[in-house]
Image (cartoon, rainbow over all chains, first blue to last red; front, side, top):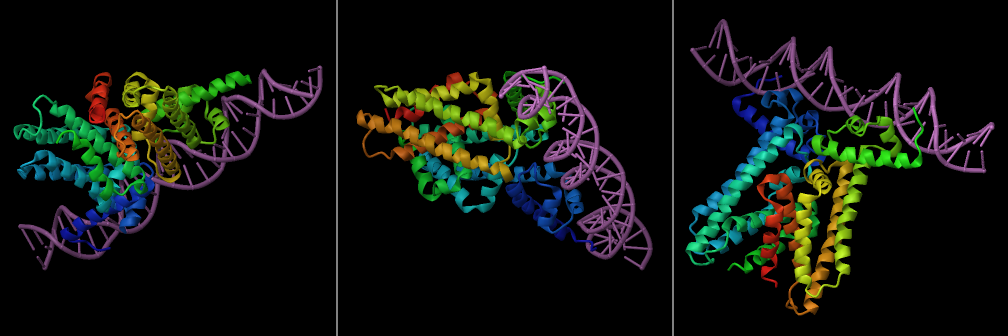
Length: 203
Length: 203
DNA sequence: TATTATACATACATTCATGTATGTATAATA
DNA sequence: TATTATACATACATGAATGTATGTATAATA
């Protein structure tokens, strides 16, 4: 029994979160027990109850982390004033998809969100969060199209919001299908193809 | 305590399945108890254990039912030798999406599959089933494109499988986004728009 | 340096769903 | 019509996860 420093405590907290990712990924959120997570993080349940209110609170932390990372990526990309916004967006989307193949952490967390948890009861709240984020991200996507209009790369009468929603759903679908069956395609090869197809009749 | 006839027994079985849909939809598969389902179906757990092995077996029945219905719809449509396969497929996809808004049962079951269950442990099996079905349905989709090539509606050098996969993912994404937030769009209005956009550069 | 709050570990009580075993009235069947 | 299998209902034992209460060694702080 040792009293940890504040630094060590923070490290414990993030170890718990990493362990939660692994346990949620393998056992599912509903089926995962706090003891599973504790064992995986090499602590006891006491530690988890110290850092988090309960299992939901752990999930909440993971959820928040991912949601923010997505919006950040887009916002960061938007700061770059690209001469051809459509190509810029095409590249961004392609990269987002390919990142699933590269970034093991994102892959696991997204797999959890799509396939390893049920959004009922207190979990339903997270669907609302996802919807809110989706609307924000759709807005961000439409910004690319608006810029494209200014560059005369896009005819003025297209509905940028419908276009953004379509693109968002397209990406969601590709992600879902990929996460469900990782072996079905190699993202590095197919993501550009899929995206090229979408943007082909725009550029 | 009455002994039911065979007819009544079959009715009991389907009542249990319907109740399961409602309970799974509200409480989630993992969180739903067999007692919840029993109460909802106005029977006891004994009845469920008589008709099904356990909760997973109930889910399996629901899963099977839906999977078959989808393939049937496509196969039935393919029997119709339409003069313009691309428009035929566009219409089919649009109808499939709009059906979510009309058919309450499909809506609930698909919501369960996407958002109310986690595919871990013994549930993982169903992901494999879904992958297998997806491959079959993608094949069926590509049949439309192959026919379109014969009609010279599609240039010969496009990869029909990639096109089918893209379309499949597109539909998946639209479904997921719609099921997650039913109020975001009116399918009757947007499904044709989304589909038109996809087929615009093909037709 | 004395005190206090921290960062956990340990122990316990409660709840609750599951599977199974058993009971039983009555269709089905011969 | 007698028998048997059916279609459930009821009762019970088991296990397991949760939340909390309590213990404690030591950073932090004054």
